[in-house]
Image 1 (tube, rainbow, N blue to C red):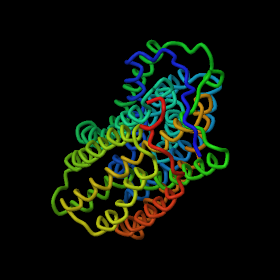
Image 2 (image 1 turned 90 degrees about the vertical axis):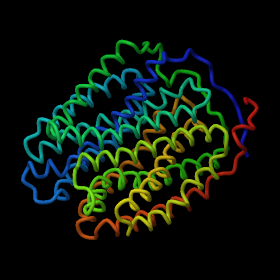
Image 3 (image 1 turned 180 degrees about the vertical axis):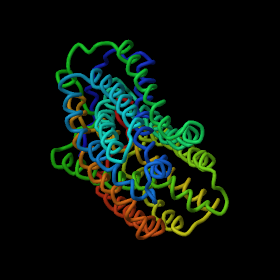
Image 4 (image 1 turned 120 degrees about the vertical axis):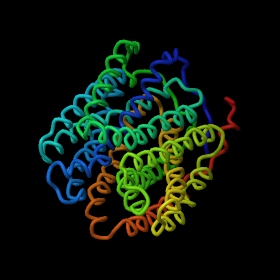
Length: 405
């Protein structure tokens, strides 16, 4: 069914510092999008809202733009310049974070945060294809990049909690914003200029599929990405408040709870290193299913767990959710020519993130009306749907068996 090829050219790799900055960009992307969710209780009190759930809908435009904005971002990355788009990303993220810190009411906050979401849309369709365009072991590279992104999630929990405690919620946006602008300046100075747009370069996918099978892979990839994004957004946007609820009888200090949640994200992020290396050596389908099926009973257990037992179950859930993240990007690298990767990634992200924005919009009202236990049962159903979708992945030989190895 498949023909394994190695049609990639071997251009000079980026300097190591560029790889570090691209990975830092992934951390910035995820951290900035979750500062709001971590600080929402404090912001709601400052703006006079009785319940944090009433403020959550103001974050929805950011996540909508994060999804839909990936289409023009991916096109510009392929047709214009990935380097140029990454400079726009860093500077734009920093500037919009500073605007968010200056907001005086919910509407200003929502508008500034929406702008942040628009700039955040650049990273995934541009930064990841740029990072892997020279990689001989893309799974491992994506795994490290995924770890960086999830350390950003951990940073949102830990750093935001500490900054709120010491300096207030505005500093939780402003200080990272200044750092992002600094990264943008460094990237502009250190990253070599591109001689031509990515769409004009020679590239190549590692695996060639028939058109029918390729269409099937794209359908599975998109459906799996939608369900994964729902699980990811329900957890990462709700875990801070869920931890507060389930530890109410043990711990109330937001800095301590933020540190515990940060520890979960940090440990779970290590799964991406392991999974990324396995992707280079094993077939997609059995590996993806091994990370998807166990999530169903774990979410059921989490619905009623409390305290440290809940902490243990949540850690296992986040290991599986984070461990599943590298698959979609690895599939794009495996099946899509580099000249098209930013556009394909952008279209896929627009669908999955656009739908997952619904998760952010529903989170506050759903939890307010039904509670976190009902949310976790809903997530178990979504996880089951994801496992069923992955059954439609085509069978293929292990990458370790390919001639280039």
